[in-house]
Image 1: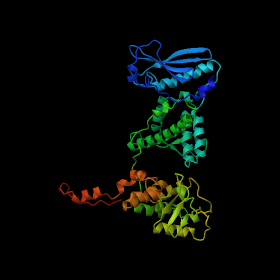
Image 2: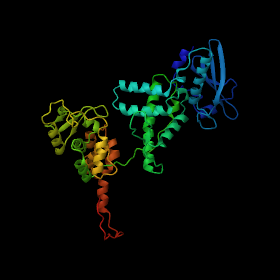
Image 3: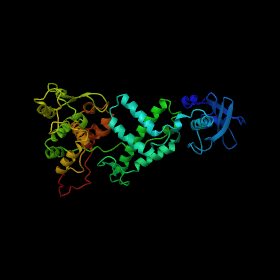
Image 4: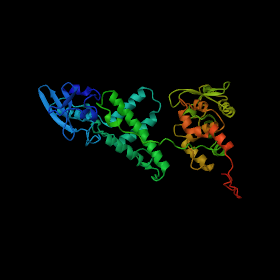
Length: 434
C-alpha cells in the first residue's frame, strides 16, 4: 500500500480549485469538491460563508479516513500556515497520507526520513558524475549548509525555514581560515552598518541558496520529493552582485612584481599579462605555449571548456623564457624545489608582496585577473575580445564588470560639448596623486 506513495505525481492542477477566483464561483456543497492525487488519495475543498477549508481523504483496502488539513487562501494570502494555496494543501495532504500509511503498517513516505545532508550528498555525487569542475567550491558550500540545516528532514523543510536560514547567512560574519582541522571556527570582522559588507554577505547567502535549491531540485527530479513548492517560492536577495571591481594601477602592478619573492614573481607576471586564473597558470605545460601563434592553451577552465589565450609581446617573452630547455609535458612554473604549486600556495606570498609594495588592502590573485581586463578595456579593446581571452561564455559578465571603463561615445560627446560655466575656481594648491 505504501510503496505507491513513493512515486506520487508532482503538484496537480484543477481548474475549479487552483485559484481563489475560481473557487469563489463554486456553490456551497456539503460533500465538497475533490481532486484525486493518486488512486485512493484525494485533496478536497469545502466552501463556507467566510471562506473555505482544505480536506484530505484516504480510501484504500477497506480503510476510509478523512480530515481537515487547513484553511484555504480565500481571504488571507497563502503563507503555508494560516492560509494554504491549493499546492500547499497538496503538500500537507501528502504528509497526512504518509502518516496514515505508517499508522496502518504500510511503508513510510521516504520524504519523512530524507535529510538535507543526504540530499546534498546525492547532489554532489551526481555533480561529480556529470563532470562538474567546481567540486571544491561546491564541497565547501555543502559543508556550511549541512552545519546549519543538515539534520532537517524533507518533510520539515518549509519555505519559512529556508527563508530564515537564508536571512541568517546574510547576518553572520564571514568565516576566516582555521589553523588546523577540528579547531574552533574563526570569523572575520563584520560591520552590518557598511552597505558593501551587507551586499557581500547577501551575495554569499544567495550562492549558498543556489546550491541548496539545485540539490533539492535534483531530489525532486529523482522523485525523492513529492513537491518543490517549499523552495520554489524562496527568492534570493536582489541587487547584490553589483560589486565595484578593484584593480591595480600600472604603478601598483609594477611595485607588486618588484616586491614579490623571485620564485613567486613569474606567477604574478603571468596573471597580469594573460588574465588567467591561478589554477590555470599552475597547470600550464610547455606544450601549451605556442610561440609561433603567440598563444597559450588553457586545457580546462572553470567552465570545463578549454581556450587559447592570445598573448601580447611581454606575455610571449615571459613564457618563452620559462619554457626554454624544458620537455613538452613539463610544468612551466614550479616551486623552488621543482615541485608543483598547490591550490593555496599563492595566498601567503601574495599578501607578503602586497605588504612590501604598500598595497592596502592586500590584493587577491583574482584582482590580478581584474587588473588585466581593466587595463585592456581602458586601452580600447572591444568587450567581445576581452570576454574571449578571459574565457567568458558571452559578454554579459564582461560588460557587468568592465563596461564602465570603456571609452564611450556618450562620455566623449559630453566632455567635448559641455560649455564651461565658470562655476568653479581652480585651487591654488595642487594635490599630489597617490
